[in-house]
Length: 65
View 1 (spheres, one colour):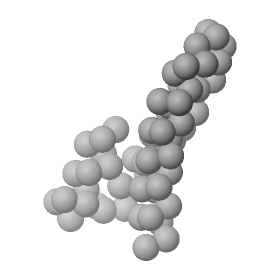
View 2 (view 1 turned 90 degrees about the vertical axis):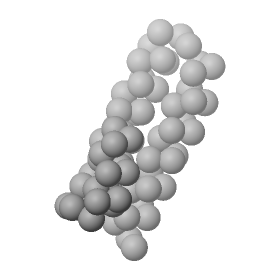
View 3 (view 1 turned 30 degrees about the horizontal axis):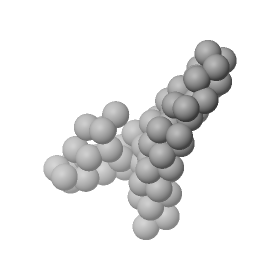
């Protein structure tokens, strides 16, 4: 996922893939949060929320800017 977010911007090849990869990471983190809730692991939700926030920030920044 990180390669999909960073590489298109660095190379200049298909830079529109960066926000798409970031949205994929957001969806992955939502799934991870659901899994941690189901397994009764609430302490992991903080990590997932931080990663989700970072990916959402990148997606928003690349779609708007």
